[in-house]
Every structure is written in structure tokens, then in C-alpha cells.
Image (cartoon, helix red, strand yellow):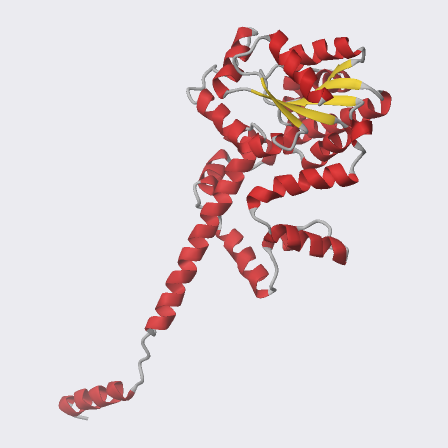
Length: 315
């Protein structure tokens, strides 16, 4: 075949092929899907960062406890999570499920529990704390029964140990510092517990010691660790078994009191210590707010704070 005829044959053949270009609708759908995936990873990163703040964990500590590299955690928190997260989300979407439902350890929930969970998920986020507190009050121990044990919650430096000891003395009941009970149970210091067993190990000791304390003491004043509110099961037990008081102060006052006690560790090698403290307090505020009463100790003497605490308990 002459070269000219070959060229003409090629042109005719090529023009007869139906080359389909992607439609504008398909391109737009892909772009929307990309934006949704990106937003999902950003939101996931924010949830991880918020959960870490509530527990008072640095990224380095979380990396050690989880066995995940600090670099990956940084990527996750900045919205650059692994693609496998998106694949799991796609599978869940195809099954008309939430990703959490695929990851749940126990899928044998009763229908009532499922319906209740769905109802709670539809509520505005700001209402959930109030609903949970109401459930604890309605279906936990009766108020008179809970009043036999006064539990003080709040960040370190709020005055839980100082006010707790004085309140217990005035009421004529035992004073229990939960962290000291944990150290006795473990036979070592809190720092060693975290070093040997990590955050999960500390949580197990915390729950066990709270259960033992409640069983042993019908009446008591209890000073809890600042992060107890971050462990749902343990905090639920505390709220349903004790009359709780949140001792509240500003981040600056929390830090100043800790340093005044001779502990400079919060500031050691950490230029962002105050910012971290603000983030922790902000992350836990809604949880602390589930307490029966709130006593603001900022700028007040021990005597005045104690008087306000006693008044709030009697009220």
C-alpha cells in the first residue's frame, strides 16, 4: 500500500473510534469526593489531637503507648492519615455503616441500645454532657447515697489535696488520694507505672483502686487524678457513686501552684507548657462540667475556697 494511502487509512480509522472524554459531571463528582476525603482526614486528625489533649498526653508519650511512630501521629493530626483509613470508610459507606461499627469489638448490641445510641448521635454536641449527667442522676445511685462520698475533680494545682484533707477533717471522714492508692497497689511511683505499663496500665490501676476504695469506704472525701474524666468507664463509676465537685482555676494559676509546690517538671524543656495546659483544660472542660457542683478557687485563699466548697455541698 502506498505511503499516502496508508496515511489516509490511518486518519479515517482513527476518526471512526469513539474516544470518550470524561463528562463534566464525573469530574465534578471526583473533585467532591476528594474534598470529602480530605475533610474527613482533617476531622480525624482533630479528634485524635483532642483526645490526646483530654488525656494530657504528649505526642511522644502517645507514640510510645500505641507503638505508632511519632512522625505518623504528626501526619495523622495534621490531616494526612494513611489511605487505609479512607478505604475502611469506603467499605463502611458501601455497607451503610459507620466506620466505628466495623471496628467495634462487640457487635451484639441489643436493639434498644442501638436505638438509644442513634438518638444520642442526633443530638447537638453541646447537649450531650447535660443528657449524660441527667442519666447518671436518674439511674445511678440516689443523691443521698452519693453524698456520703465527696469526690474532687480538676486539673493538678486546683487544690484537691489541700482542700480535700481539710474538708475530710471537718466532716470527720477518711481522706483518700486516689493516686497514692494507685502507687500502693502497684508498689511503685506513678512515673514508674507510666514507664513500665504506659497509659493503659495506669488506667487499669486507677479503675481497680477506685473500685476497692468505694467498697471499703462508705463515707470519704476523695481527691482524684486530673485525667480520670478521660476514661469513660471509670468516670461513669465515679459520677454514679460519689457527689462530685470540680475545683476550677485558670491555667496560669494551675501552673503557678504546681511550681510553688517545688515541681518544675511541667516547664522543663517545654516552651509550649502553658499552651499545652490551656489545650488540656479546654479539652476537658465539658467533662469536668458534668460534676454536681463547680467551685472556682482562682485568686482565693484556702479558707475561702473551703468555705465555698462546704456551702456547695450542703446546698
